Length: 578
Ligand code: ARG
Image (cartoon, rainbow, N blue to C red; front, side, top):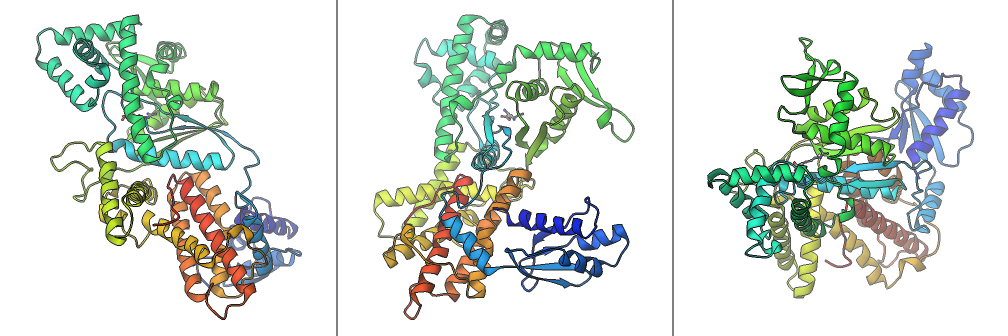
């Protein structure tokens, strides 16, 4: 149910009937202020300009052509030619009843599902996951859930960094360590292991040469070496899996499609670009010079796809990835969730892929960019001593802080309850703090604001959910037993009904633009509309008629379910009691 789209269609038809050219849009949008209807059609002004008539007269003509519309109670023309739309309360009540009767809240699956490849998380397996991978993991996973809910076929691709010269040093060190201890033990702390290997590489006589030999052997497909590499990769992936588990992220081992998977294709791809004159040799390296992205002086933008020594780069792998996803995975849409600082790199890769015809023109190629996570000091988030923050440690701290907070708020909880709530709130807070910010901006990581029970936070929404649900416990009713009409007698009920009915259009918008904060803002506004309703409209108090009570309880049920569904799409859990 996408009301905005439905109204837009209705007004488009009316515009056509009024003789307005089809390329004029009715521009229907939710009304920004109270008193201007529920929605507005703002397209009359632009259309009037185009056909050269008076906008108010044209608006009147559109309105004359609306015909009988059960959704619409009345319309009025305001100002220079805005059309304010008031929805029918009867229609809204019926729509909400239908949503209540449906597991999916009447959100239909998409008519033309796409195959969407989502590239997200992508940690480097040589090291432990750190905060730099948090945003990609959280944002990507929310999008995966949402697109899947809409009925798209989502193929998750965890483009893990599992290849490169650093593995020479790591494997040389590992082959020594496993003479003394199990590989699992040796690799229990990846950071430590990496540091040790690096020290040996820098200081130990002969080690650097062995490391280089390992690189050659690895690239040459030496079976023993590959076995060792596989062992390393497997253990490192399990570390990432622990994080995914903690974070309630849906990525599975089967979603791992690391950089190494493109190895065989890289020389082929480079040769092909050379043969077709898209890439050229330049000082021993192979480079694509992009005229399409030339700077002000007209110098083309260079992208190296093979280094002087013959090594491949990130750019080469991303090109191979795009080609693979479009042609083998048959993607209609490829979304790469990567730091905004890599915008130039991805723009070059996208431009080259298009130029080379690596993907059908119809395939949409999108960089879902996000800003940097900052500390309180306004600099990229670091430990107190300036080191990179390990993700595992950060998440543990979130759970610890939330558990303490919950215990303080509610001292009667059992140990077990406290731990459960602490985990759900702590992890939810970290995820929501990230998702609720416009993703393209940098954002400041702040424990106190993300864990606040007031404002646009996970704890606030999670708590709002439990509060709504507690009404049913107090009333002693099961929501599925509720009957009767939904009546929207007051302004607060009406405002809440409109919010509830907007869930579908919000999901459509997030699916299209990939900005999860739009869903967060919606859920926050829904919770606020509920608070307004709760204050204005008693549900269980004496003096409320049975009819009113049943209607209001149905609204409560819809609020709870919409909050739970929305948060679930963001990868955030709710609890019956907090
Ligand atoms: N592995 C890289 C890192 O750890 C990020 C990869 C981003 N994904 C991509 N398709 N380029 O920083």
